[in-house]
Length: 72
Image (cartoon, rainbow, N blue to C red; front, side, top):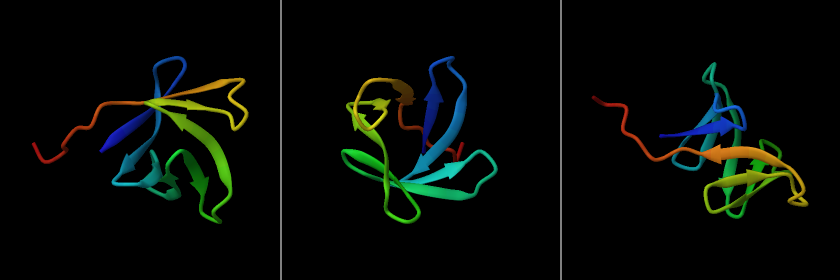
């Protein structure tokens, strides 16, 4: 699991594998490098390294946190 962290440092979503979930546990998209796409397959954000940006790269959305296991 990897958290999706906004520019203020607050987690607002998370990835399990390549599936993106809201904090309420609802599936909201997928990581299809180098993009995050919505449930319809539309590109919504660009991923560069661990950074998440608008499609044109002009604004930072946040970053993907480090991988962590949630079985402990």
